[in-house]
View 1 (spheres, rainbow, N blue to C red):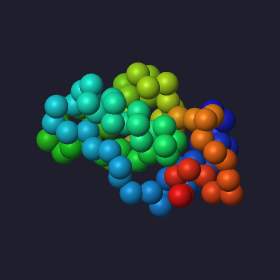
View 2 (cartoon, rainbow, N blue to C red):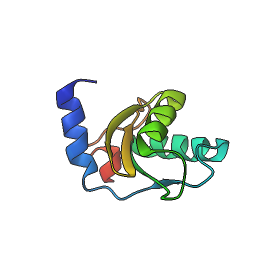
View 3 (cartoon, one colour):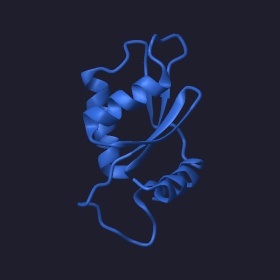
View 4 (cartoon, one colour):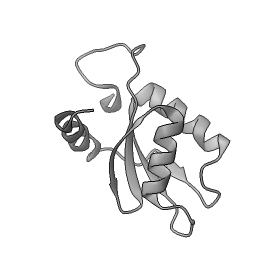
Length: 99
């Protein structure tokens, strides 16, 4: 992903609310399934890591991106944004995360 594309996605992600939470159990199979489903429908997803967990947001973001074939857009504090393009989505005037 180019720097310009990443910057555009960061700007879009600013307005998103958190859709997936990484709990104290860390990265589980249920979390992977849930995040994969959300990425399939929205492409751009904001994720938050629990405060008391042993996993940092950066580690969780890199692990999830690698397992799901996605890219980390940004990591800020305990929140990170992840992107995976879905070629099967209908393309209209608005991107999938704005619908």
